[in-house]
Amino acid sequence: MAEIVPFRGLLYNSEKVGDLAKVMAPPYDVISPKMQDEFYQRHPNNIVRIDLSKAEADDKEGSDKYTRAAAELAKWIKAGVLQRDERPAIYYYTQSYRLSGGVHTRKGFIALSKIEEFGKGRIHAHEQTLSGPKADRLRLMQACDANLSCIFSLYSEPQLALNKIFEKEVKNEVPAVDVVDDNDVENRLWRVDDPDVIRRVMEGMHDKPLFIADGHHRYETAINYRNLMRGKTPDFTGHEPFNYVMMYFSNMDDEGMTIWPTHRVVHGIKGSNPSKGLSPLRGFDPAAFLDECRNYFNVEDYAFTEGKDSAIKMNFLKRIESAGKDASAFGLYMRGVNAYYVLVLKSRDVMEKVFADTIPDVFKNLDVTVLHSLILSKILGITKEAQEKQENLIYVKSPEEALSAVHKGVAPREDANQIAFLLNPTKIEQVKSVALAGHVMPQKSTYFYPKLLTGLVINPLTKKQQPNVGVKL
Image 1 (cartoon, helix red, strand yellow):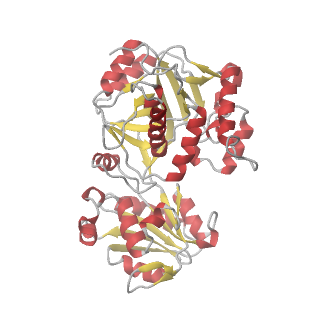
Image 2 (cartoon, helix red, strand yellow):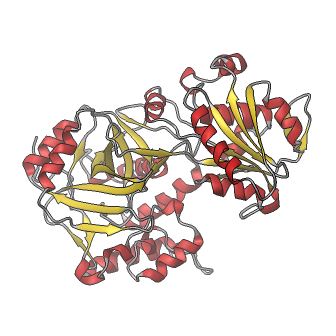
Image 3 (cartoon, rainbow, N blue to C red):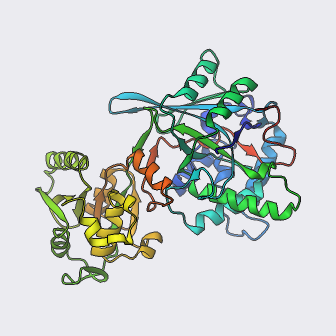
């Protein structure tokens, strides 16, 4: 079962910091060094100074960015910059954003979730993780003894009953936080501390499976932190704060849920051998690559004249979307070739014929699996290990960014960028199916928009905080 409980959050004190928008930030893993500098300059209490503290040249064990983050957190609490709520609460959180000419609102709530191992309960992952980010987040968590940002999880409830409970509760209430972020998304947060409302929400979530949408590294970090703390607490009961993690829960059946694709740029392919497929050890030949693709895909050509490709590009982008409604389809652009291409998988049994039972059935109709297994691995020869290490891959958010990275040689790989692959979004039903089957997608299979703000609320993991104080089922 999904076991959730309220908690006494740490929130920014607007009387101390002023404009709350200036102390918020996006998740740490989308912040570039330039953005980090901007957030540092924006406000002396910006959450980035804790969640993504800067490294310094003379850092050493016991005196580094993690200890500085912990010192900042303690200082802000002592100075009243961050204040602890007196009563356990669940925090209702909405994000309103413009898309396709209209305003959409994603609704959810922040509470604590009892930590479970993947595959042993009702919490499911859907993407692979890497060891580096988990080690970084664990050191920060050990230093600060706090959840600084939320895991983003999904649940299914077509009746939208929980959303209706929250909407009724906050209808005439002023939000504790109401800020517009750098992406022009309005973020609003309300405290909900009525014990009866909390009990109804807990009961409503009791039988719900949870699917991690974003924050896989942080969730696995929470598992590791819990295990370390249990090792230090031989008489643990299972109710200590370290057995819980701060989580945002959003209904996947709500109309405000949006998934964007993450596009791929391939670089560093150094050779070709058309008779045996392509290999990063032998070079890249665009014509040979296209010939190999035609064995599995119908290839549509959108040739253009340099500098006069606007209309062609628009038709190309529209075709990727329309083709993707009935089959796995990708946009393709190669450096030095004045044409865009749309690759449409010839039939649904192509993946079955090529991979048989070496790939789980639930994966075979996923665009990201077709791309990574059939194109990147089999045709281009980029091994699964190289893909996981991102040795030949760059992940970008917008089609224009992907195309420019290849056409203009823009950073970070410049002349080494050779191919851009444009994808359609993964469907929410596919995320659910893969997770329930106990599998994980390749990295960057989904981009849930908008990103959750960091700095809205912090969950301190102290011995004094019992997660379920004041609430009885």
